[in-house]
Picture (cartoon, rainbow, N blue to C red):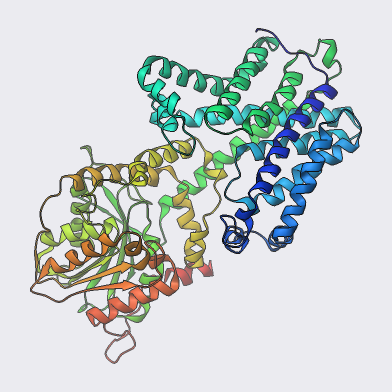
Length: 621
């Protein structure tokens, strides 16, 4: 059980390519047996699934489109099955390299076609096939070793990264994850689930052993490969268990396809089986890792600076809790007109209001102010007491009193949790408050029936992402597609905030408080006297949860002695009602119509103009 597993380069490549071929053969046969999934109306109907390539380049889209017809996809899987069977035959020729490359390349091209149903085993098999196929075809022994080392290093990352990421999740640390997985219909096993409940200490030891195996897999290279044999044996047994108990049968051969390459590269160079092995790829990988780490650190610093510096017109205000709030005055407006103050939602930036704020600033005589709550953008939380939702309410009140002239009225606009913060701020603002706009607002009674599974996992998700970003992984993030819907000048700023750990930590803190606060809600909403209310809902929100529409109507009905109105923006989602220009303009039209906002171009508007037409100035830069 202890010691290296000596294997020659050719033998390692042969074993790995055959194991990967078994995985590819099983994969293609499964797809052929379930052809109805790729036909019209099936789970992988290409007319629907092609939307996932919307952000890809035209060459990629055309390539995938060319193989995504039902007949073409079927023919490819038949060809893959035949080639995979051929790869299982004896032999050591260069043609095997071509077979490997065909299997790997066809798997990569077909991956979007099988958006639902693909898994990590397909990706691992593809990686092994590309590496071993290229190693078969290149003439240089040094190049062959470099390719083998590449796949072996990927194997170490596959295990170690998976293990360390699991440590971010509480269910893995407290060992409840095994039982949780085993009780599901998709990957569960009733017998193992009962066993975890009857033997919690043993189940905990098993869970932590799996974690240790994954996190410490690179120790297979320590002390001349002394732990290689035990590591590989344990990992193979783990995948066999996955295949049997969880139904992940492709894992049984896909991940073990890495193991011969790990065995070859972990054997001491003094051993005859690996004599002459070229290990320069390791040094190159270390240099690349150091360079990548440095680049990630520089990227994180640049994004943090972009996040916190604000715009050229940003201002700071200190609240009663000691928090430093960063805010922008899009337009001072006319002194005799109210100021619209925009409050953003959970894990959302003030720039989400870009379409609305820019249009209000340019087309009305209202003053426009947007701010970032403590922990977001350049705002800093310096309060020493545990966070409560009331802290953000007080911050909003202090912002209004400090940033808006005392003689001017205020209209609060709040999206999501920002709407609830605005509602609670109403009783502190008195006669200054001339109206509230609730944009798909949260309601303290929305958890009356308990949290959904997605909502239960949000806190852990926010914490995990925050930790990962603090480790410098923000450099690996790709820009989300939704950011491209914002005005061009705002996109870099929003992405910098999205890739910064501070915002995710602030969202985690706020979500925990919101969850606890709303759980204690009983009875009806407090009445708000004499304050007009416009409640705007996103159609997709109320379609998904019709109860939400009733809650939004309650928000309108809580405003007594003044006009109130509840409307729905057709086709909009919770986010797109702000960031999509078409929906955002509809929202703006509703606000202008409800409050009868004076047109900036109307007679008597004077020379007042926005102090910060941000999009124009930023674009000019």
